[in-house]
Structure formats: structure tokens, C-alpha cells
Image (cartoon, one colour):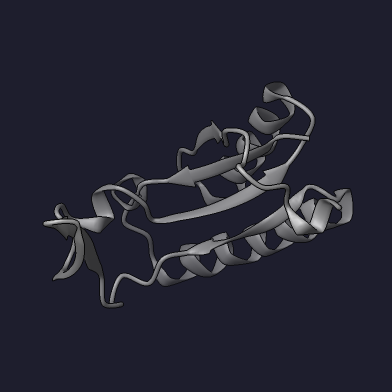
Length: 122
């Protein structure tokens, strides 16, 4: 089955009270348990806004580690999960559940065919 990335940009998250954040955590945790029970959960998580972010670029063919990303990380990725489902429609259905559980929009992307088979599927 194909794997899908369900993700959100941190800038899509509205300003929330502490109680709203706790509630989103409760509903999201319950949804992850539902995904695991359904056998579609691969992995996922939210990104730490306070963590060190680095970029790696090639200079004369050699990797050079750069301080920070090229753009604000929060503008690109706030959190994600990967699901293993049979088709686009099913992936969109899980993304809808994630959007409801979190309270903000989600995007769905299908991964391309991996160059090597996943060890967990062998």
C-alpha cells in the first residue's frame, strides 16, 4: 500500500489557550490510537519550535552545515504523521480526522515509490 504524509504548517495553527492546546492533545492522542488500531499509523509527531534547526548545502561537492534553515521553519512544517493506506481517498479521510482532532488544516501528500522496500513490509 502507498504511504501518505499528512502535515500542517505551523502558521496554520490559530492562537490557542492552554486548555485548547490540552484538548487538541487529547483528541490527537485518541486519533493516533485509532490509527494504530486500524493498522494505518506509520509514525509522526510535532516539531519542537525551540529546537536547533540546521541546513546542509553542497559547496564544491562537499556538505557544509549551515546555521538555521533558509526560511522560517514554522512557515513550512509544524507537525506530521505518515499513514499506510490503500488509496488517496482513504488518506484524505484520515487527514480530515486529523484536521478535526487538531482544529487546523492538513495537507495530504503521497510518497513516491521508495528506492528500497520498507523493512516493516517484508
